[in-house]
Image 1 (cartoon, helix red, strand yellow):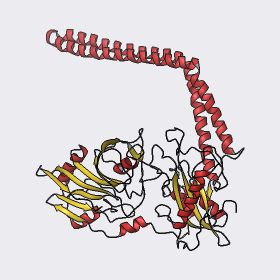
Image 2 (image 1 turned 90 degrees about the horizontal axis):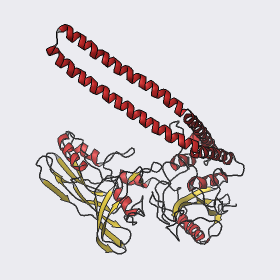
Image 3 (image 1 turned 90 degrees about the vertical axis):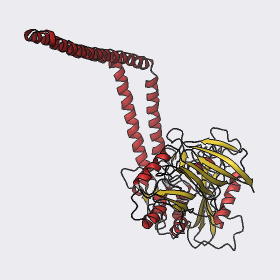
Image 4 (image 1 turned 30 degrees about the vertical axis):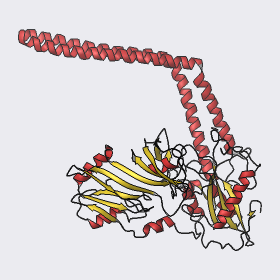
Amino acid sequence: MKHFQHFKTTTSGIALPEKFTFPFYYEPHLLAKIATLEVQEYLEHQTDFEHNFGLKNSSNALAVGKMFGVLVVKNEHNKIGYLTAFSGKLADKSLPEIFVPPVFNMRTAGSFYIKGELEIDGINTQLGILKKDKKYLSLKKLVKKISKEIEDDLAFQRKRMKLSRTDRKAQKKKAIAILSAVEFQQFTKKLTQESYNNQFFLKELQAYYQAKFELISKDFLSFEAKITALKQARKEKSNYLQQTLFSKYAFLNQQKELKNLLAIFDNPAIKPPAGSGECAAPKLLQYAFANNLTPIAMAEFWWGISPNSAVRKHKNYYPACQGRCKPILSHMLKGVEMDPNVLLDTLSEKQELKIIYEDAVLIVVDKPAEFLSVPGKEIKDAVYTRIKEKYPTATGPLIVHRLDMSTSGILVLTKTKEANKILQSQFINRTIKKRYVALLDGILSEDSGKIQLPLRVDLDDRPKQLVDFTHGKAAETRWEVLRRENGKTRVHFYPISGRTHQLRVHAAHKNGLNTPIVGDDLYGKKENRLHLHAEFIEFLHPTTNKNISFTIPPEF
């Protein structure tokens, strides 16, 4: 079989997994690791394609890393091998034989997609010509100038009318004291006529300016109408192209059931995210099911430089993305017996929640790692539910702030609404002092510093966060080294802001410390736990108004 790769490494004696890999949280099986090493060896020395992964020159603006995947499979003769694929497209748009083909090749010569792209390119060319037309640019400038002059003059006339109105009121007030009733009536009539005259003048002026503007802007509006029509045509062609493309991406499962993207994302309000079906995992499973191969185990890894927004480390394993892949893989893996979601299994175990301080309005707890602050969609056991059960008469919202699920340490709760409101205000005004301790997976060269990288949620892969200087929220972290030990660095983090995953992203991102926290299963490498702990907090007590602080050393 063309894309079926035989293991070069001896795999005899390695037991097959009992169940297939749960793609959204996993530790790669040994066979998947061996397949990964063989593909990485190929990538190190291949001459089949050209793609700048940024490994030799990371400063190159065109350099971009890529996600690769391996799928260990068994063929109809019970022979074990593997398939491999890459997400998206290679820079030279080639399809080397080692990799399985895309689910749908939109770039086949003469395809509807290429024709559609050419039509859209043609519209863009027309738009470019119109927008650079000298007459259009001159008219646009003139219309803007005349509009400003008209706007300023009308504003001036309205201001004059307002002053006249104020002056008439003053005259009327003064006249009533010195004029007779008949004289006052005549005077009032005069003022009323003056008001009518001013209003009539403004209406006439507005009509004059409207006629003048329409005359001047006639040719300009003709250009604008053409531009609007072309934009609408581009939008309609683009939408048609996208919908047709969605219908062409059809995915198999082991029952040979075929579903396209429109059926998988069966919600008119939600379009399939861009790039759906182009990830490595769907490509691998599609080829396996189409060629009667049985999936055994799977793994995906990053190769090359990290993108500017996300955190990706060269050669690290990563789970399938939630936004694009989860709906697709839910269909493709229907009926396939998979490993359990270890994360949920771990969280469902009862963990001890230590209360380290309590008074009439406050509760301070030591939250264990891998334990939710508030209930989630699938997991109800959380700090909030435990405290709510223990203190059923508490009137406050309880939760004042949160710790990330994987982070251990100090969490403050309140028993009353008043106390909650006061503490919330301190968090909002950033008067509360917080300190975290973390163990980083590498050696930092500097001893202290500040990180400023704005963050937002990755809409295609929640709950991960992205660095985004356009749409992200400001996030700032101060840090200092405590000590360096065995190839790792222990640090104190002082978060100035409190964004989701702030410390984890600021540690791991290439423009932050570029050194993930040990055990970070989202932005680094999974271990027994995330080595991040909320060690210290200080704030004003909501009733005594005196400073109160707590310190809990980490267990790592």
